[in-house]
Image (cartoon, rainbow, N blue to C red; front, side, top):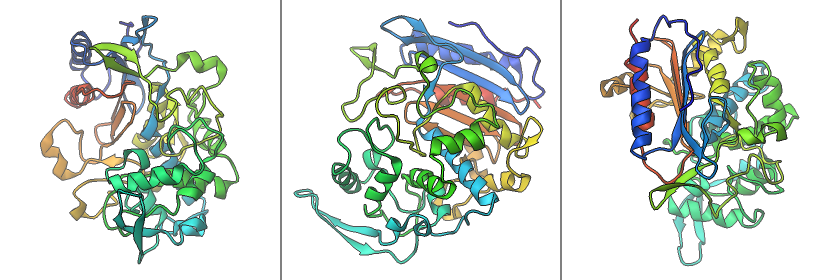
Amino acid sequence: MISMACNNTKSSYLDMDRLNLIDELITKDIKENKIPGAVVLVGNEKEIVFQKAYGTKNPETNEKYKVDDIFRIASMTKAITSIAVLKLWENGKIGLDDPIEKYIPEFKNVEILESFSKEDTSYTSIAKTKKITIRQLLTHTSGIGYGFIDGNQSIKAIYHKKKQSFMKNGVLCFCDEDVTIGQTIENLADVPLHHEPGERFTYGIGLDVLGYMIEIISGKKLDKFFRDEIFTPLEMNDTYFYLPSNKENRLVPVLSKKDNEWVIFEDNRFNVNYPVEGKKKFFAGGCGLSSTVQDYYKFLTVFLNDGNYKGKSFISKQTNDLIFQNQLPESFGLGVGLAFGIVLEKDLKNGGTGSQGTISWGGYWNTNFFADPNDKFIGLIYKQTQNIQDNSSDLFKRAVTTSVVK
């Protein structure tokens, strides 16, 4: 176990004795072989108050987790891409209800899936009656699906078939091939939709589409836009699509279980080591980044400080307020804003959610965050696992939310 590295100043909002329950929860899960380890961070809007690393990150070398380890954050990339889109919006470059075909014409004629044949993967589709908007892409209501993790097996098969024409291996998120996100999005733009745009919530590649849109409008590759507009202003010095050689040794391996022992995970669909291997030219706005808990904490502090970072405006206060507005109709039954999932009043009865308006999301490789704008606390728990089931992220969140003594 790595010793705690944190600011010893007692938080105005969080009881440190209660936060120490995190030690018991994580250590217990490691002893019971539910997780190999984790890195956690808790802070308020001003400072980190609890930060610790637990367990073994590499069973082959017995190397332990460190608080500055770099993790694949997968879908936690989406919030960063969303804020990049909102920066373009603030600067008058786009409208949130602009049709995406205005910037990527390939989406003009996309249709809705009608029928699918398992025998030969042929399908029929019907014309949509509405245009896909930027707001719908931000909120997963465009009808666009998600390829290799799509819940609709027909859509999933169609994505796979289309992808084979230009990509040998890999998937949309985790690609080490000599292909760009622009080429990929343009090729996949004719995959049929699940439903009419705006009709319901369907988790999809909308943020990857918007990542390509950012490149078109800004004239910069997405990694360069992120560096200039987000990472440098927020001092996020350990967040990358592809790690520089001097930081490659800080990338945490993905682990899974074999015969109840932790082993380094491999996947025949793609190269798990994409952040340090391959052509390094595919910038997936929905899932491509790797980062540390400290860097993502810096990012989240913006939204608890009215859009400011260290007293300097990063986004306007009104843009910041907009981020916390649920964009979905009440009938959808869930809260999704322009950048994050949002806790609604109806969710509070479940407990352990944070207060109304708390933002949160997670990533494919088992990383999670939440930030409460009312009680002003942030929690991050990073693991790097696949094909296991554990509830340590939920228990961590409960420990943090119940430590509020304001």
